[in-house]
Image 1 (cartoon, rainbow, N blue to C red):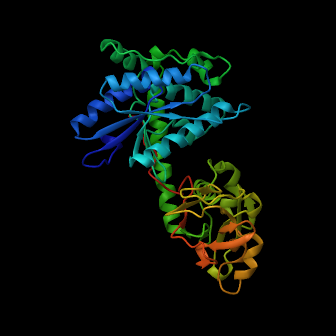
Image 2: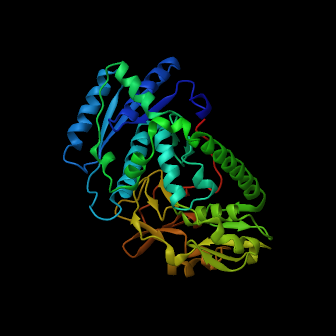
Image 3: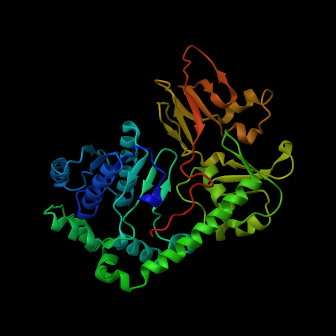
Amino acid sequence: MDRLGPFEPRPALAVAVSGGADSTALALLTRDWVRAHDGSVLALVVDHGLRPASGTEAELTVDRLHRLGIPARLLTMSNLPRGTALAERARIARYGILAAACSRAGILHLLLGHHLGDQAETLAMRVLRGSQTAGLAGMAALRETPRLRLLRPLLGTDPHDLRRLLSEQGIAWVEDPSNQNLLTMRARMRQGLAAGRLAETGIRQALIQAGRLRHHQEAATAVELAARVTIRPEGFAILSPGRIGPGALSALIQTISGAPYPPHPDSVADLAAEPRPATVGGVRLLAAGRFGAGWLLIREEAAIGAPVPATDGAIWDGRFRLTGGGFPGATIGKLGGDAARFRRTSNLPSAVLRTLPAVRFGEILASVPHLRYEDGPNKTAATVLFSPSRPAASACFVTAT
């Protein structure tokens, strides 16, 4: 935990607990750590509703945690439609409900129970998918999001040690039958990898070496972006003239597009070596024009997401977050064709204006926060912040050990 800081003088931590051995052991270890640091812990148990027994298991887990002196809160997922990519959609929804619970509780650090076995499975799957350096580093021990720090303090720990800890203290756990479902790639990897021989396979050392390489690459990317790029609050970027590293361009495209994943550096290598007008990954590259020499990276209008209700905390297009209040009954979406009304009063290019967030009541344009435009009686103190899911440069990759 010491290398995953900094923490507050009295750390407030949350732990995601599924009820399995790994997360139960993590909750127990976290309880002891916060006691030694005059802090607090809150266990968050999600009933995913994907199996008939999930509700009973979640309630049993909450009861077990309470008996261990660990405050616990039950969170329920609902309305997750069946269909393709169910596991991936459930994972995204689970992180969303956990992040929201942490926000309500004023907690900045969410601990996850991934261990060395999970790391080995992740590495094996990425090898099969042809991942390069970034993927072969495995999961990060620390990842920062705009409102939460995700910590994985057990990534270097053998899962057998966690089960031994619980058994020695007489603590039971829930076995999820889906972990043995050989229809999933991860379960097949789990059977193929002898978890008891993780330390002998060289996986740990390989992950450390790849992690160090990824850390240095991300640090170099951050330095390059700081020297070459200005990111504007309206959601676009200005890139100075000349070639740029493919990793830096890839990271910048992800930030401006709001996408969950960046384009592969190889797919943008030619463009990075010789920047020119192009559209890639939901982002347009245009000559900077009135902003001087260089290039603008602007959200591709055709790829922008549909309007969403303009409620407090709403995220639109994966890029903009509404905070400080909402607009009841309104939606937030792109300015689009209404941009023509502001061309004479704004120095922003039309391509940028059309992508700005705008609040509407039906078809009536009520607010364009970045242009300081408000119309009508429905004024609020709400702010719309450019807050992409992944900043162009954040905390560099942190290895497991």
